Amino acid sequence: MMTLHTPLDQTWDLSAIFPGGSDSAEFAAFLDRLDTDIEEFKSRLNGVTPPADAQESAGLADIVERMQGLLIRLREAGSFTGCLTAENVKDKKALQLSGRVKVLGAAYESSMTRFDELLTKVADPVWEQLLVKEPFASVRFALNERRELAGEKLPPEQEALLTDLAVDGYHGWSDLYDTTVSQFRMPVEEDGKIVELSAGQAFNKLHTPDTAKRRELFAKWEETWAEKADFCAEALNHLAGFRLSVYKHRGWESIHKEPLAVNRMSKATLDAMWGAIEGAKDAFVGYFERKAAMLGLDKLAWVDVEAPIGSSVQKISFDDGAKLIVEQFRQFSPQLADFSEMAFEKRWIEAEDRGGKRPGGFCTSFPAAGETRIFMTFGGTMDNVSTLAHELGHAYHQHVMNDMPALAQEYAMNVAETASTFAEMIVSDALVSAAATDEERVTLIEDKIQRAVAFFMNIHARFIFETNFYAERRKGLVSVERLNELMTEAQKTAFKDALSGYHPHFWAAKLHFYITEVPFYNFPYTFGYLFSAGIYAIAKQEGAAFEERYKALLRDTGSMTVEELAHKHLGVDLTKQDFWQGGVRMAVEDVQTFLNLTENMVRR
Image (cartoon, rainbow, N blue to C red):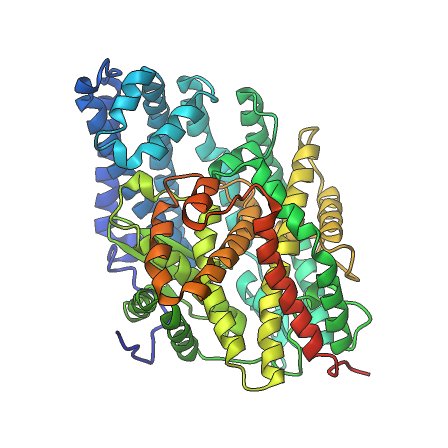
């Protein structure tokens, strides 16, 4: 058992990975070697022929091992530049390095089209013989997945061209959005002076308990994004246009085909999940009505949904938040708690509240170094504590997979969100149980309900918006005005039109719509939330005995579909609503508890 030493440093240490930041000579040399090795890999790949039998597998085996080595190093490089650009959006050198890493990644991906072609040309009987030998056996699932998907794509030369063009096209529009966000400044009055806040700082201000101030700030938030809307719309339209063109040439009709494939899940599972949620939304409308009454409002507006109840926001220091997280983790998993203490002590976390940082939070892995880094802006709220627990869940997931082959570590976003959301549940549920008063319990339960609202309604709105946006984008460019309409319509549908006002420019303000690595960066969050709820129910029944079983599940996340994962480790069928309804019921029970506790807390 470790002991957390405070005070903790709230800035991360990147020098342990590459010293010198964006001026790092070591990192420059790392990229030069990577460039050389990618070229050598491409040359070797062109010289390999499909093995005619299992005894001729040496050439392909060498390629598989080299490919995984390159994948690890590319992830290392991408994580480093991602950290540099996040901690200081004005670091132009970091942006240049990020561009170079993307070029290297494109060169690697371009060569992978030849690799995929090689896989498809191995005769089926020979292929099955290869998959029982190393290095193929330990990454059997990933290799099969690539082989099957390659059969649904364009010829290798065309796929390679698409990858090359995406650097300055597809990914370039994402970079434009990041540049636009880095210039975001929202003027607000603090202590009689006008200060300009970054996007991340401004977003945190929207959670003030003062309704009039909150709505005033939200109006400024909308107004500021409206000023950036033309740039954001340009980026969003061209990102979608590139994707749609690729799908058209591949013959893919459904806009959901790629995101479902990326997340290794079926449409039946997605439909079952949303179906279970839709059937329970009326309970959350009741929660909105009660919260509005408690805030002295006729009806909640968008900005009121996450407003704190009461006259003051509960504040917590970073050190106390860290202790709280470790303490609650330890009750479930000593290994998770020890890992988290190590992350705090070794400065793997960037949490300082300062200007110049990008908004949001993330966890990124450095697989070559066997480390992770967490990024966020800690403003002292319980929601910040939840975010920190969430990102530590991501970090632990990677930690238990560090000794596995690179391809076996490539788990999808939906199961990645399982580990992180599960970590949040450990913290929030324990806090509710330990609450000393009804008022404290209400605050904590409401925090849990907020997460359910985010996954069941906010995320659903994003999914509906993107689905409808792509349908219109097929016909041509979509204007700012129409994007606002689509966003508002989606929010009304997802929230059952229970709010008095919405967030038309949410499509501009949300980074997730502009991420190129994962299309439809939304529904996997809801999957992770409900899947983790099922895991958590089992963990509560089994106690400490579940820890090793949980680790085994995490280690399998890169080696099977979500349906196979759930069947093997939980014994459930994800294509049926039964499993999903169990997690939804847990959230509805929280709403009922909230309504019972707040019956006498309504403002008259």
